[in-house]
Length: 254
Image (cartoon, rainbow, N blue to C red; front, side, top):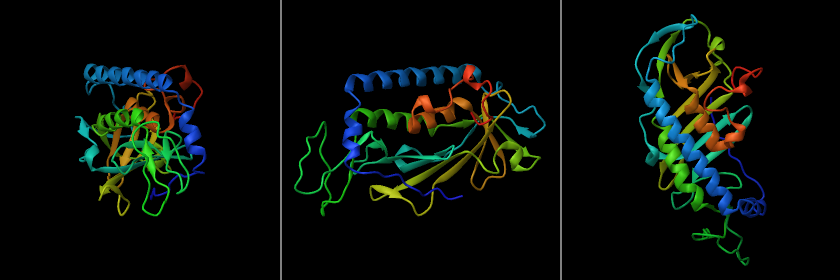
């Protein structure tokens, strides 16, 4: 599967979208996100490897927690996410700061027009082309959350004994593509990794997932996937880190 699409929109709409977020509101949202991350770390240390297991005849389990990625935040130029038919992109501006490719960043104005910088420096291409500038309020937090997500550990791996459809991996509703960094820009020649995320286990504490090229299926904690989707789509549009009342009556992928 190839995930190379990008999002764009009228440049005039992006400054307006950025201004709708007042600094106090942004700080409150990121403070709440920080508390969520702290809770995830505590949960990670308390639960260990014994909490998640398949236990439903879907494959032979391999015990032990296994890192999913061998690269770090400094190796990345962009992350593309596909979730329930929607796409979102996390990428770097020319200074290397992270932003979501939506209303969370600003575009430079064409030559002859002026734009007051809310913070930082306006980025303008040599030919006046449209460039991106990250919101400094978001950039540091996005970097921290990306670093956390790249330390993702599979609670277990299983060897599939059924078709991938049984795990929701034949046509996954969540696809995450990690692109490298070259000369300060995303390198779209070949992804560093592509992660396919299928159904939740019946316990609803973990997902079936598989990296492109792997033969084994990883059981990934739900909160790790929720962290990634929350970064890209907002926590209100992503699965909760732990099961709650919203899970009742929802599909297996939520």
